[in-house]
Image (cartoon, rainbow, N blue to C red; front, side):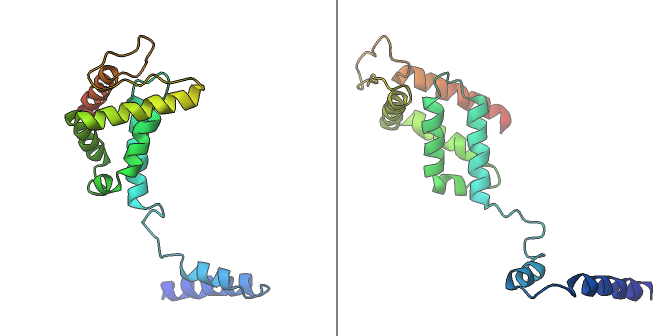
Length: 162
């Protein structure tokens, strides 16, 4: 009995509020669709997972110039298939990506090339591109060896979180 009175009171208040308004399709959709996303985030799971990975990279990658961070985050965004396989544990997707890069020297060289290119863009300087098997330029911040070491360090930090 009390529930009926409460429901009638709410309906009366709602009628009073709406009495002076003109009908609007947007408002009607809003009222009817209010419960549609109840309990769910309007942000897609893939975007949430990608954001979590990018945040982890930003907080844990030791990269003073920032070029490696930018390119690694770009690779994460491009790896939709890998990330979508780990929506419930996004850092596993990052772990898989890092492992793939470190296990494949051609991928590592391509990553370093892109990082060098990005560094040149960011600092408006000519980048130093290291060819496989060649010694690096003394002023090159991103060598094959230094990037590999940085990625291994990030992978070790990742092991602590997963």
